[in-house]
Amino acid sequence: MTTPHRRFKDGIYEQLARIGKATSSPKRVELLDLLCQAPRTVEALAELTSLSVANASQHLKVLRAARLVEAQKKGLYVEYRLADDEVCRFFVSLRGLAESRLAEVEQATRAYFEGRSGAAAVSSDDLLGKVKRGEVTVLDVRPVEEFRAGHIPRAISIPVDELKARLKELPKDREVVAYCRGPYCVMAVEAVELLRAKGFKAQRMEQGVADWSARGWRVATAREVAR
Image (cartoon, rainbow, N blue to C red; front, side):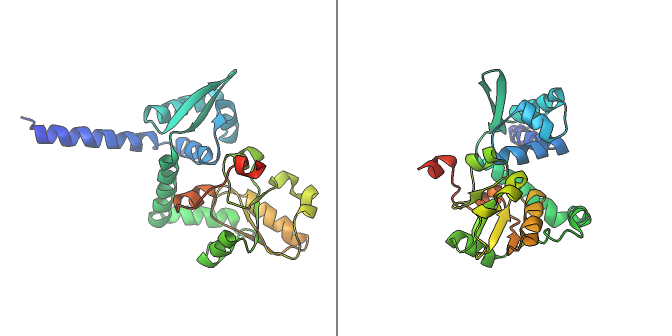
């Protein structure tokens, strides 16, 4: 006979397993990563993850059932966002656990970035300290809507596809530290390669906004920039 104690335990672990089931798909993990950057419509998420709109909707439905994301109707579109900041911290922790336990993560990363001059990331506490103190020019090369949703304080927003035409906005006598969505994002790599080719002293910062926030550090918004 099942005891109340056993029923209690089974019920608790069943609920915990809902999070595991919701994140058991690579595409759903990628969707969480993208939503750590900014809220997005189903159509935008489908394009970024190479899914059909129907498939993206199904994956988002699973994440919503686990209460990891929320949806809001905006005109003709449905916009998704993370349920709260704790979900993004969960994603960062999940990524960190995979990096520490699965050699395949490091192998895949090395194979993809090998030979790219801008791929070497500097994630030392010294560099992070310089960024926090405003001793370097911090360049956010993500799409502008992601910058508006949240960015590292004092960062300059120049999307990577606009960088070549906007180089004059960056000081050449100061070190430039570029960042994008995190350690597996190639936009900052492309930015550093371009900047170095044009004579800038540039480095890629591995941490993105999600990592910054997970450390408990303040994230700025477009509202602050407008002041």
